[in-house]
Image 1 (cartoon, rainbow, N blue to C red):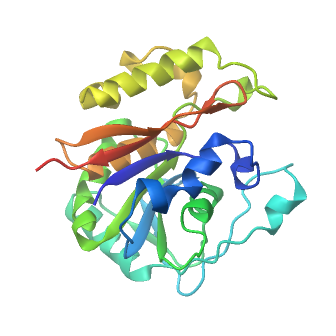
Image 2 (image 1 turned 180 degrees about the horizontal axis):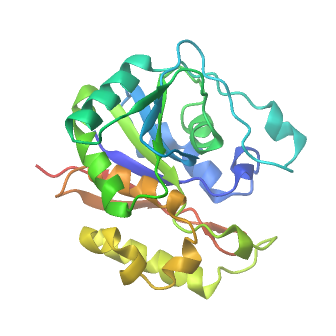
Amino acid sequence: MDTFFISHGSPTLSIDESLAARHFLQSWKAKVFHPVPRAILVASAHWDTAEPTVNAVEGPSDTIYDFYGFPKPMYQLKYPAPGAPKLAKRVKELLQEAGFGHVKEDTTRGLDHGAWVPLMLMYPEANIPVCQLSVQMQKDARYHYNMGKALAPLGEEGVLIIGSGSATHNLRMITRGNSPAAKWAVDFDTWLRETLLDGRYEDVMQYEEKAPCAKIAHPWPEHFYPLHVALGAAGERAKAELIHHSWSNGSLSYASYRFTAVQ
């Protein structure tokens, strides 16, 4: 099963009909990905832990509103997808077998907006079990790529693996309105697209040294590491495809990618 990196951008993706990325995600089942997954695993930028952690929730997942100062209707949205405790245990097993050491299970944590906002648009029925996987900001890109590699067998088990982050993410540099994308954001975003489509995955692992404006595009790495998880889960010979591209707020790229395993 293909893996995906979704740039979820601003939380207003949940209500803003003017965002092209919103309409892209709403067309997911019809135009992007037709198979119905048995379960979904989301590596979310909005869950950072010291060691790998999965949420193993029984019953409907709580909706976490981990954003502040946004319009009131956003705090009334719900995405009560079933938890996926069996998938959580399988993720834990695969990571431990790959040498990731202690992997925690969180039996109370729901879905943060890195998961529920895109999934609300992609699978609005909220009837597919969802498990979240945390990232580790203190680790590097290769660590997260290897995490994805360890999880590759899930694709053969009917699990859709999604990395949810942003191709660019510097909240101090965003602007209001529809201002043109800043040069630093365009430079990094273009480098990422060309590097992925050329299959230069080693460079993506070393993006801090290889990419232009890397430290401006990602002052902190948590929104980029989900890409490495999704890429690793597709295998070393994966083929990358840009499946959506748009901008908002002058520097938020919604570039999203499909990674297809090549046998």
